[in-house]
Length: 178
Image 1 (cartoon, one colour):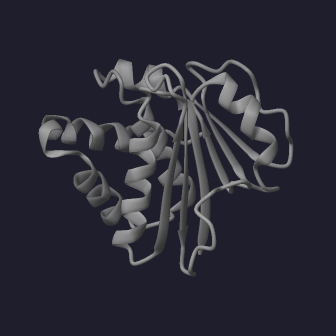
Image 2: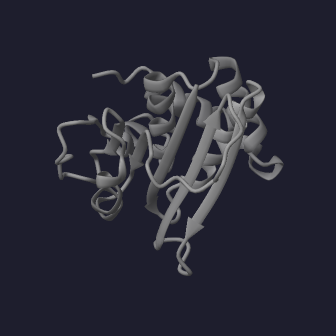
Image 3: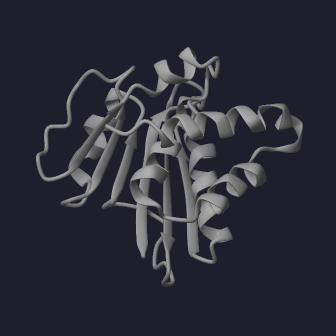
């Protein structure tokens, strides 16, 4: 099993946190993992992306240049990274923010209104975790227990009041099939 994941969007959307959760979940399942954040100098509001590798085998490079899965939370990210997704890969788009469609027909395109779903469920600011839930539902890159535990381990002590909201957002994403 191997999954190369690229998460991309604006700073402040929780891109790096979502990647951290995925990496932690894989690690809890005994997989080899890497997590490589990348963000512009602006941070909040600037660009952010995160490479995550989860594999049964040692990982040669933490940089994901040909993702199996792309999570695009804004239009610039979709435009920049869509062409790099491997054939038969998955592109998950936050369709609340991105109205453009995936141009390729050799990948599975998933349009998830994550920002709207989070808002409708009083989980404002948790669209990233709705997307993470859909990522899990599509790939099953780890066990569900490890995925939930990855969230528990990733939420810092000073933000423990957000733990259950993160889990609730993931559950919405898990149940949001086409």
